[in-house]
Length: 435
Ligand code: GDP
Image (tube, rainbow, N blue to C red; front, side, top):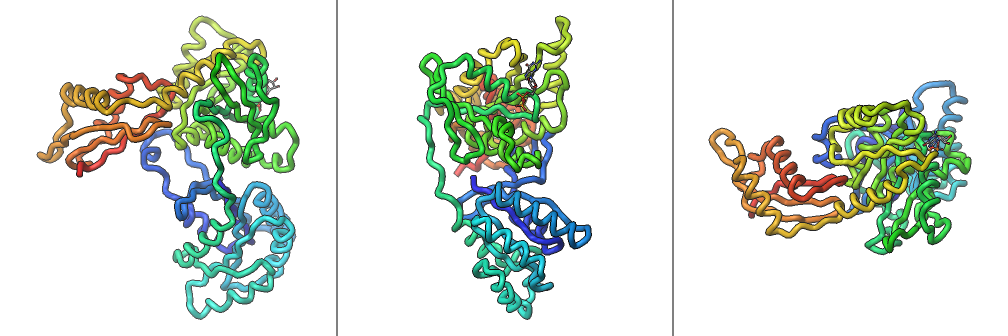
């Protein structure tokens, strides 16, 4: 997905615009407990193109020099990470020298810049936008982030600069996976350990987004691609000074993958950031497995793995379906097992169930445990069918979707899981009114 960044001096309304553009999260994710939100990026959509919008951070206090320095940093980050930059200025305050300096930096970047003049909710102020032609960044778009005016015009300009939609580079049978996790959990070491045992087809392919290294390999006739973002950090790119943007790169690797392998440090246990990273993969509907690395360093008895797994289940209640594996990149213990599990969960992620089979499972479930009655009205399930793969998604047609209780929906989801064994993949249910 393309990335859009908002740049501008303090108080021009960057956060207001960010919030205005930040799309609604998928409801199915909202009601899962334990997923932490993150303000670094948000998903957004306009005219059927979805994109990420990144928050380059608030710089709201400091001396003029400090502010200028921070805006410079902000602009540089935006220039590295974004496909399109929205340069936001204040139409009420008018053109300032800081705006001019920022414009110069942005101009040199040769990245597409869309100039937006904010706070033009008042017709008398509308003409103020012409002052900003002086910045040499083209036609200013008049907006009011606070009142939601001109946002469509702005996005129309932004979308024009998006790169053409990416084409799939690999065969549909190829299993694409990424190792995700905090720095230093051993992702690079695991990538090397995995590739050390596999027949690598091409040594290195720069990913389409150029922020990941793709390595295709084959195992027993099955094609795989490992999408590696961790290695990039080792190359000492400038932007690595800000670790938080590595999150964005991980996110894009997740998007391009079928399977996200969440790597946890066995020595340290689970922390908040692990959950956040897992949350991204979950939101994207990816197959997942949890790999506990550095298991060689952990002092163990016969219950240690069991206890660790219990802790994982407690900390990640929303992905009880993900298999857990204890490995060591150092000693290679169980490293080959990672690929076996990646393949297995990828198969489940792409599984198709016939409509008759889905219906007999739902019928049995309803017979065994009928839906609860709500104020005398009864939910009636007419029929169910699988509507998508990756992840497996089912539409359940009912007399009135309002009558579907959260807990009954969970019950049906569990019945579907029990019947088809969707280990390692999320599944989605859509409750629809029977037409
Ligand atoms: P990344 O940031 O997640 O890619 O982590 P690295 O692969 O760079 O590993 C971080 C550090 O942990 C390095 O010093 C590795 O040598 C070490 N390391 C990685 N995996 C293991 C392991 O399984 N056992 C031990 N003992 N050390 C490991």
